[in-house]
Structures are given as C-alpha cells and as structure tokens.
Length: 604
Image (tube, rainbow, N blue to C red; front, side):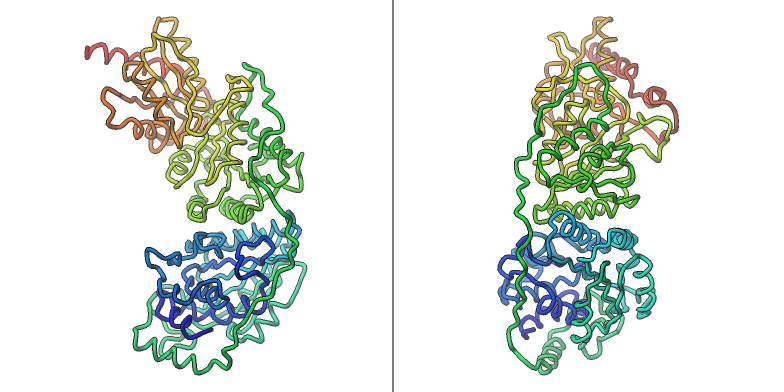
C-alpha cells in the first residue's frame, strides 16, 4: 500500500480497526478476488461486504490502491462534499450495502451468495469481513445458520479477531479455537490463520469446500503502531499528527516493493437480467362482492407476478401457509427462499438478493414480526435497497391469537422509513395492483394485508396509483368524511349503510397508500363535508392512518379530525368482538359520525 494511502488510514477515525485488517484486505483485493476495477458493479465481479463498517478507510484505501479512487480523494474522508462517508454506503459504486450497524453484513452477503449460486448460477464469489465484536450479535448467527443449511460454498466469511472491542475486550478475546468450533457447528469449514501472515491468508483463501468457509484470523488491533498495538482505549481515535508521521515512516520502510498490484479479471458468466417494467400477465379475475382475505390475494398476485418475470423471488420466515407465499412456492419452487424463523436475517437476505438489480425480492411474515427487524429495514433504506415486504395478520382483527401476533405498530414503523412506500389494500383487486406496483417501485415497499375475508369492492379494471386515494362512497348530502383501510374500510361502508337509514350520509375514502398519502383528495372531500374527518384504523393511535391524516391537514382552516384506533394492548377474542371492544367497528363509526355532526350543529 502506498504511503499516501497509509497516511489516510492512520489519521482517520478508526485507524486501529483498519490496521488489524490490512493484510486481509491486501490479500483479498490483490490476490484472491476477481473483479474489474473500473466497473465495480459488474454482474460477474466477486462481491465484498465490509460488515465492520467503521473500518471504511481501509476499504477506501484499497480502491485507491486498485486505481478506482484518486489518492487525493482519500484526504476528503468524512467531509460533507465527499462520497467517502464515515461508513460505507451505496453512493460509492464499490459498495453494495450500507454497513455500520454491526452484525448485518453477513446476512446481506448470504443473499448475494444465494443469488449467485441458485439464480445467476455464476462463478462469482462473495467475501464478508466481520469484526469479532459484532459476533455477539444474534443476527450474525442467523446468517451463519442460513449459509450452512443452504451450503453456500461460494461464500467466505473472514473473522477479524483483533481481541478488542470499542470499550472492552471482546468476550472470547483471542480464543480462536472456540470461534472455529462454533462455525463448524453451524455447518461451515473453519480455518484458523495468523491474520497478519500474507502466506497463510493466501493458502486459506485458496481452499475450496462444498460448504461455506470461515477464515478465523487472529490479528492485533493497531498492528504496526508502536505503543498502540493491542492496547485498549484507542478505538475510533485518529493518531496525533506527529505520531502518525512517525508510524507512517516506520511502516513505509518495511515495504519491500512499490510495484503496483492488479486484481485478476472475473469470468464473465453472470446472465443479463432485466427487471424493469414488470407487468402482470393478465388482469385480476375477482368478482365484486365475493369475499377474499387480502393476505390470500397477496399470495395469488405474487405467484402470478412470478410468471411475468423469472427474477421475481419470494422469501418467508416459516409463515408461508399464513401469508400465502406458499402459492408462489408451489408455482415457482426454485425461486422461493425459506428463511425460517429468523426475520432479521430474512430482511438482510432480501437486501443481498436485490443488490446490483439481480432480483425483485418479496419477503413476507406477520406484520408484527417485522418490528424485530426494524434495524435491518432502517439499514436497507440507507442501502437504497428496493426490497418489498408484506406483513400479514395486522391488527386486532386477526382474533383469537392475541396481542403477540397482532401487527399494531407496523404502519408507524414503515412510515418512519425514508423513501418507503406503504400500501394498505382493502380488497383483493387492490392487493394485486399493490404487488404489481411495488415490483416496479424504487425504495422499500411495505404491503399490509389482513386475515379476515372481506368483499371485493373494485372492478378488475380499476386503476391504482401510489399516492392516489379512492373515494368509494359519496353523495351531495355527505356530512362527514370517513377514512379507513383494510377491515376498517369495510366497517365504514357498513356504518354508512346504517347511517343512511337515519338520513345521515357520509363519504368514505380508501387511501390505498398510507405513505405517500393523497392529501389533495382528502382535503377536497373534507371541505365538501363541512370539514369533518373521521379516521378509523386497526392499529395503535401512534403513527398510523390518523396521524398521517392529521399531518396532511395541519394548518388547514375549518378541518377537524376525530381518530378511532386501538387504544391499548389488546387480548384474545373473536375478530368482531375485538373490533367492538376497541371502538373501530361499524357501531363505533356510526357513533363518531353522530358526535361530529351534532358538535358541529351545536357550534352553529
């Protein structure tokens, strides 16, 4: 490594973490990996994931050494106008997934390796460098189990066992034999090496087995820095200028050749993939009035979409007979990935599969179980990933299974994710359209589906768009606008029928997407109904439809919003009983409309 690049590493924010991995990175990028330097995202290139993302400067230095980055750019590290951020992000063409929230890199690498082995059937390999500190994260071992089960022999994980964490030594310190036994227990071929021996690393990377490989590298944090090597309290601290200059000179004196190294070129055998403009092979075939659960309509739609493009894939966490992704598996078994009960890893696998536009990934489970994967979802947004997630069994309407199974926070969670699109279809036709639209939408898409069977209300030729609500019931005499989605839209329609008998008329809106919300349609109809809006949702008050509507109309004169939502932790019971208990059924809507109308009349 040239001294200029070395200087940028030593004066960076995490020099000690970079130094422990220096030989690993050198061997990987200039001996083992095959890739085109000036085309970092070539489909046939070997992949690299830096799970210990705080060591980003060593990654940037490697790409400068290879010739993709200019040496001078390294001096702009972490500056606001530089692409070289404090942790890797896909703004950098050589970075596939954002890292920095530790424990997630290997899951994404598994998704890449699975794609390479089973979908691309190409020769590229995937390498993931992890720190020993992050090996305390359970998500790492979810990924280890996944790779071992599917025998991902094109995947290599490198454990940089440098002994020291951020504030304390890592729990196993340098007991590398324990790491080896753990890896072997998960179905990996595990090799212990001196992580600072180029010769040992070259030999280890050259071993090919019919299982994933873990290279357990015993290293020292701050290797080569006098007075700092293997010492605590240096994590994340740049070296003082005079100290850095001295260390640079010492290390530079040890370099025996200044010969520029070049990586080997890949075997260009990854197939050309086109995932643009995916259209359903035929329109929906539902009949107005027939009853369908939107969770089942999701499965039907996904299976159908699979016939439109052979790069549509489905993932699930052992809930496929409840989310109905089993319908996709039945028709496209080679494109279904069972991730078992490991939702964090499932999201990471989806992110990895979707990198470099190799697949259109749909991952499903109960809506409530995505909450445990929120960090993976958050990082997927930073990764600019285009994954699609479907959460079934939302709300108290699932019935007897009780609160642990009820998605009641999911809208709030996904609304908080940057650039996410949140679909909440209310019948089978809308669900099929949501699946098709999600497949062609950038960013994270979330589709919320329900367990109860409700009538189809839309014709098969109904047109749907992101951010465009549907006014499903209206008259010139409407006195309030009721906004519901999923089961509560049907409760609103039932309430309208009941109110009509009392000569009270309401307008009913189906938002279709909760994010972005159709502010224009909501305001137009609210103004036409004397400014009265009532929202009703099978979700907690916080962060759901009601708050989204309030945010849309805030500051608008003459608009009032009444919100019906689940007020506290629910319990088991029949669906109808629970809707009534929490005041989000048709009777509660009728009462809320009457209160809103009478309040307004009294004010007049």
